[in-house]
Length: 252
Image 1: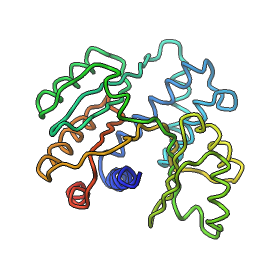
Image 2: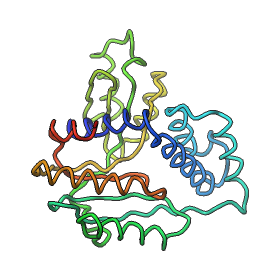
Image 3: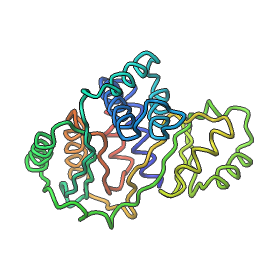
């Protein structure tokens, strides 16, 4: 999963540097709203989804006042109702693209997503058409600085006990992958260990990746960027092999 980790960490660095950080806040505020509505109460102790949304908010340093205001607003019966929707299709060079969005207007969102697919060399498919390409995994990202002084071999054994399938480490982050079913178990394990993840979420990881020519790869990166600029879109997953050349193009 090293290619996915490389992609995610580049995006994380870019997000910390530019206006995309504001969009991360917006996405998490929507997560809080949905968690309160679906969980039926604003108490994170008895609402696991809200507890997760708050943890992710803290992971991106969202001010506590913003979090509390979002919970209070979502508790109002007249607040917006958001729906979580997904779209599947193919981008340039036949690369699979899985788009996750949260919206208060599905007609607007599907229209925007279809327009981006069409304009930038892709095609929108039917839901379920890409399920065989991606696995849904739990992904936990922990800053290396949060693990200072820990015995990493011992720590990894604890993670395996919590359901870790893979653990990757680079200079900045330790990334833990679990099965969909073990997502909650890993949350509990990290809580037991007193470790606060910067992010903890379910992501769609490609089972295999496809390598494309550099120019085609840049077109794929471009269509992904256009999706991510849409206010309703939360995440875009793909099965393109992230070469060093493409990684450098992402960081420009």
